[in-house]
Length: 275
View 1 (cartoon, rainbow, N blue to C red):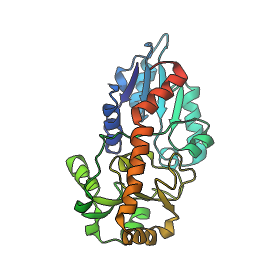
View 2 (tube, rainbow, N blue to C red):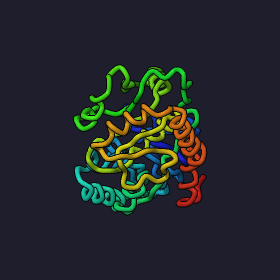
View 3 (cartoon, rainbow, N blue to C red):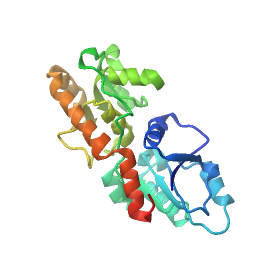
View 4 (cartoon, rainbow, N blue to C red):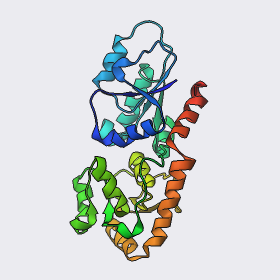
């Protein structure tokens, strides 16, 4: 059985991920409920003291297969890419995890871990009517100086606020474009945010990415950091129907071709033979 393991400590930035787990009808357990002697697959996204305590508490035979799906950026998780790689492989060496998944193909290649697409689900969000768009852009990201240096060039009344729950749904449905600016200078993907935007059929302008797979020119637009403001303004001046079609192509790709549950089950099957 595939089980997703949650920490008792809640992290707002992972709410969308756990909604995807729910929509894909996976069962969940808390980290401190994991039984490493069972023949289950346990997938988690967060490593904190709860995982260490669970691991150190176990003794005897181990039959479980453990997976860390690491969605954190290297600088935020380990300060440098080198330390990111060292920390990742130390966890595998110490048997904390049997696998590490990363949803940026280039990052997975550099860290020598497994690349798994983080798909979406059609019920994660529903595209809003084109005639009821209130906001030009939405970003749903933590405001850093680097991001604010881009967002400040747009009228605050036209920028959908970062929010949660019902308000988050309303803002996303009422937005025309999604604008993605990296937290740092490194061109890695933001796969969970992309999965969210795709569910709502939002056309995405993103800061450039090393390897955008599975995204392509039919489903996303990229540009360099200094060009984002001008590029976004140009897109806003175009006929929106053209961009709306791009958003719907992205939705089809991420919600159906790479639907979250299907991707996870296939990846686990390939490794363990467990469905």
